[in-house]
Image 1 (cartoon, helix red, strand yellow):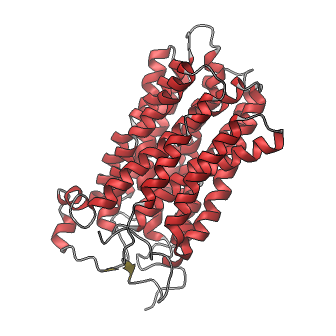
Image 2 (cartoon, rainbow, N blue to C red; image 1 turned 180 degrees about the vertical axis):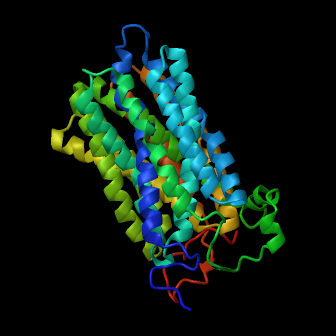
Image 3 (cartoon, one colour; image 1 turned 120 degrees about the vertical axis):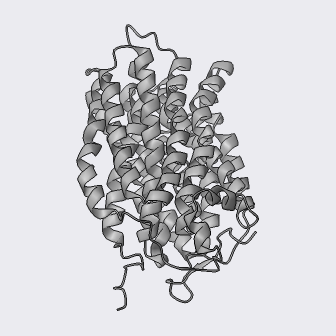
Length: 427
């Protein structure tokens, strides 16, 4: 019996998988961007004595837990299937956000942000791998990209909630919304397959026994076939996450430093995330025409251009537009890098590849907020924080440009399908 149109050979329909991934990452985006939204309120907390350096440290504590979550969840997802690790991660994330809401002092609040980071780190590789395996081969980038826009949509929700409730409400109240993932656990258990499934891949000559031995996965990623692309993906993810987590923590505060009030800075944050959604979807459509590498390079370069534009006095409409382009250059770029990694590996390596790419690359997430904080402290200029993002953006574009084209093609893809013409497999 032939599969119905739009249904990959894994047996999982793309529509429900994309919708579930979108919702999960939307909640995760809220949890990620909430620290940036409450940043100005934290700086004025009467009892906690929060400084700019402290705010950067809180962002870095959130990011510090992410490599642990990414690597453990990616490995567990390949070994045990996506369902169980995804369920555990959702519960973990909800409880960590609840702990943030009731934290009574700064030290405890910082600890809860570390635990939140572990949950955030775990879910991104699991969701990306799950949607990638369900996606239609000819629309792989678009469908995975649609799911990953959930991070930016969650950021939009954060901006709206923050603008509506702050500074009148206690900022910790906003963390209570992070308990919502608990209601998704039954849905995940019903929709996500217990075992890893994927369409057959032409040219993947790994023996079946090797695919089953978890100890061989990292060895394969660092072996001759994948080594170059693995190291470049790790470095590009580092650059991308410096931008993402630096911006998520600092964008509203940087706008305040440039003379805008809290409501205005949150409008810029909303524009940032709207740009990420629209830009990611547009870039994914281009990527599905065989231009994934070009799309990713251009998005890194747009991040640099947009941050330079944000640093200069501009009419308000132009500043909002630049903020939207910066959102695509940050969140959109990292979404494209994740899509690239998922494209480039078969199912039994995909979770591990994503987990290690995000895990090692999340050193950039750890460094990002403190890096921006250090630049703003060392350079006495309201524009310094924006300039700090240009270097990792240019570096990311260079690293993606160094990837070599490969020839891996899904056996399920129609003849002449453009989806995988530039994947960096044959090194």
